[in-house]
Each structure stands twice: as structure tokens, then as C-alpha cells.
Amino acid sequence: MKITKATVTEENLEITRPYTIAFKTVSSVENGIIRLTTDTGLTGYGAFNPCYEVIGEHLEDALTVCNNESLEWLLGKDFNDFDDLIRQVQLQYAGSISGRTGIEIALYDLYAQHLGLPLVKVLGQQIDSMPTSITIGIKNVAETLQEADEYVGRKFRILKIKLGISLEEDLERLIKLRERFGYDIRLIIDANQGYDFEQLGEFCKKTAGLNIELIEQPLAAGKEHEMRMLRPEIKKLVAADESLIGPEEAATLSREPGICGFFNIKLMKCAGICRALQIADTGLKNQIDLMWGCNDESIVSITAALHTAFSCTNTRFIDLDGSLDLARDVVRSGFILKDGIMTIPERPGLGLVPLD
Image 1 (tube, rainbow, N blue to C red):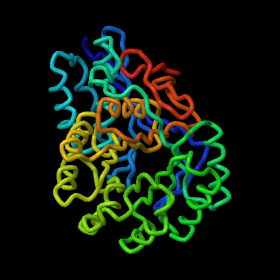
Image 2 (image 1 turned 180 degrees about the vertical axis):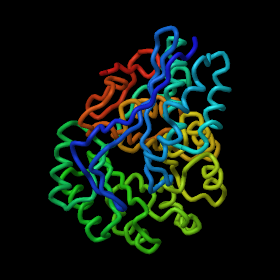
Image 3 (image 1 turned 60 degrees about the vertical axis):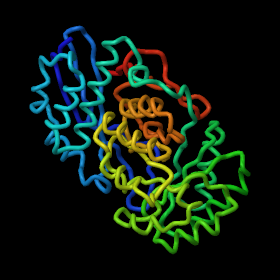
Image 4 (image 1 turned 30 degrees about the vertical axis):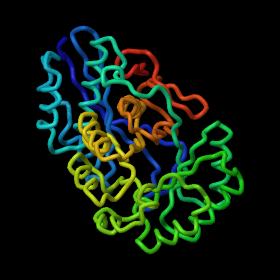
């Protein structure tokens, strides 16, 4: 099997529900979409959407590195040494984290299709299904409760609440959510680096009875020395996100005394599936659990993240709702979402069905 055509396009997938987090408001969604076609008639899909505030890369930056001309070296490549092909991608596109991610996803999709297996089977499936959290951005109490009512009505059972602008309002929103839904609904929070050490201590004290299961990146990246001073019962709830870009940071963060109980792995941060699995392995060796997150992404890359997450025994949370509010996409299927629970269909590769 050889690659005969390789293209990348920029697609505005739009968004039906703009939202705010601690450092920005999202009102549009542009993704880079990779398509690789082979002489056997198979097409592999990849997608990428970087977050500039995390990796310092805009989509336009990625597209200057990963474009139709730069993809020409893939033409004629076969899959006899797949691992070497992935290594070449990491070297060839060293200038773009997200570009590497998109190309690698497309290659993994093709490789698994060639083998006639879902990608998760190729990676080594450990998990069959898991509930995903669904995210509520920063908004007032009434709007938070209204959106939560909708999601609970759709049978989601893990709400991820964005915080980090006003501690007082953050606490009020969480208290009101518990009053509305009791403890049947699980709550996790993401401060997106919005607190300082003292605010985090106050937050944890005042939410002690609310059963918050995970606290994502409460302090700013670069403040890891402060996170090492957290009390053990808080530290075990903390997930490193913006502090964790790739395997190198995973190794640093896991050194004693560690800073967190969870790694938040995003394919768009770490440059693809291969490096994501290296982070996961570091977590496993150091008894750190995994949360798999995303940006606003096509079903293509959300599905790739899900396959990767389900191949890891230490996956405890998936936060893979990044395609649910898109107005359009280039594919459908990929994953099955029913009552807030995600599963993977028995189709080769990523199991995607093109819409174009």
C-alpha cells in the first residue's frame, strides 16, 4: 500500500455555542484537515486545531509548515516500516506541533484500515466505554444552571465547569449546581491557570463538601514549584494541562515530590498519538492517572484521541466533547455517543464516514 495523494485544507467548522474560559472567548472554529489516499483506494483523515495560548502556534502558523507542497514527500511512501514513517513525520514537521499531529493521525488511520482493525485494537484496547464530561464555559449562575439542565437532560453525568476569573462567582456556581442536582452528577473543574496559590487554598477549603473530583491546571504554567507544596489530598485531584506539553514535561512533573494526580493529555499539545502514549506510560510508571482532553476539533481528531485513551489502563476521565457544538464537519461517525457514554464502533481505522 502506497500513498498516492496528500492534501491539507483549512475548514471553518463554525460553532453553535460560543463560550468563555479564563484567558479567551471562542466564537469560531477553524481546523486543518489532512486527507491521505492510497493506491488501494483507502483514505486516511487527520485534523488539527492548535491553541496559541498553550503551544504558541496559530492555525496559520501550522499551515505554513504543513501544506500541500510540504506533503509531497509522502507520495509513494509505503507502510512496510510504519514506526519509521512516524519518526520521519516528527522530524519533517518539527516546526509545527499541531501539523505533526494531523499528519500522524491520518497515517494511523490508514495503517489500521490496512490491517482491517479499529485503531484502538492496533494500539491494544483496554477500555470498552466511558462517560465523557461536557464543558460549561464561564457564565453567570442562571446561565450555568440552564446549560447544566440541558446536559443533564441529555443524560450527561459529568459536568466540567470552567472557572478562574472570579473566585466568589466560581464558588457560587458550584454550590448552586450541587443544590440543583445533588450528588448524582459528577463535577470536575478547570481553572485554566486562573488562580494563585492562596486562591486555590481558599477554593479547596470552601468546596470541601462539594465532592469535586478533579481540578484542572489551577495555577499558571511555570508555577510548578508552588504546586509541589500542595497538600497531598489536593495534589491528588490536580490535573496538569498547560504545564504538560509533551513527554519531556511529563518526566519532569512526575519527579518526587510530584505536582499532580492526573495528566491531561491532548493530542494537539503533544504532537500526536505516539508522544501521547509516551506521556501515558510515564503516568503509569509513576501512578499518575490520565484525563484526555481536546480543543474545538473535528470528529476526526476527537476520534483519534478516544482510540488512544481507550488503549491506556490508567485512563480515568475523558473530556472529549470538542466536536459536539460544531455547526458542520467533514466526516461523521467515528465514535458512538449515547447517554453521555462514548464507545468505538467495530470499523477499521478511525471508522470515519466522509461527508464530502
